[in-house]
Length: 141
Image 1 (cartoon, rainbow, N blue to C red):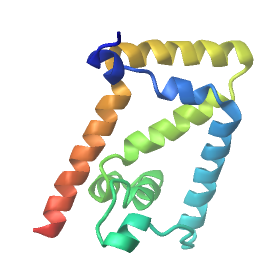
Image 2 (cartoon, rainbow, N blue to C red; image 1 turned 120 degrees about the vertical axis):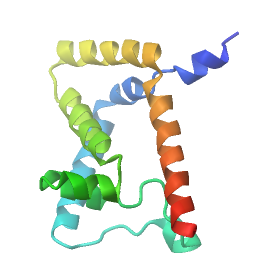
Image 3 (cartoon, rainbow, N blue to C red; image 1 turned 30 degrees about the horizontal axis):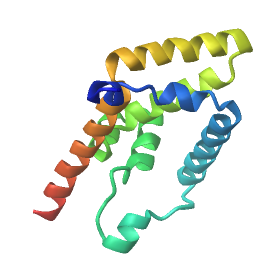
């Protein structure tokens, strides 16, 4: 019988990275989306903001990532504090996905061990949700 801790510390990113072509496709699409956004084209409207009129946990992440890529760290963190984490994750997943077979598998195994020990993904999701609640509260009041 698995414990609550086992669920919280379950590897997620390493399991996703095992689907190399899926991850490469997602990284490619995100890079294309960021490039289009850089040139002023909006390809995606947030469905939560469109329907409910409130920001979702990811609202502002594209603008913040663009600011980060332009070296505007203060602006990026003001727009969305998770932009550095998002950009680092994008680079990490893209980088691991293009590694040759042996290094690729070794990286995934190492990431799985680290995720299991640290509970990073759960911590990240809880932090993102908490950050969103704070932003939502400040926006509404």
